[in-house]
Length: 148
Image 1 (cartoon, helix red, strand yellow):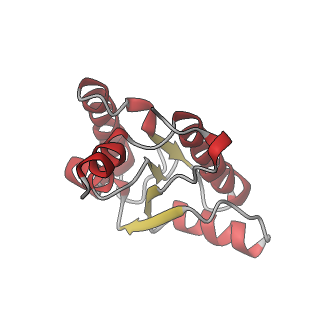
Image 2: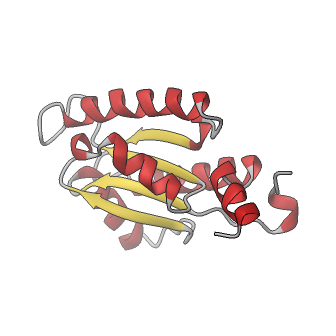
């Protein structure tokens, strides 16, 4: 049985983000004292185009209840089309997660520019709320049943 927000479930979320726009947006949020959930573990990437499918799957395997990728706006990638490559990978992993029973809705991709501190914070809040509604990852529940 999935635990929802009514029982104090605090999801573990991993965010893969580029060191350009997404990291600058996070810095902007901090400079403006815009808070976002502390349950988000940030993994900085040289570009979201370097976010390999295996990295996303490993995040789930290592306990993430949800994962999201934050890249530069489409058409504004510092590595030309890295964010477009990431978007294709995220779509493929969402389909895979649906097929294996974890659920594609546990993965999302967002696009922000450096000055979008509020939008960056909103993505963290949106994912936290979404994953709270979904409850713990089926992988986490399986590991707990197996005692690992």
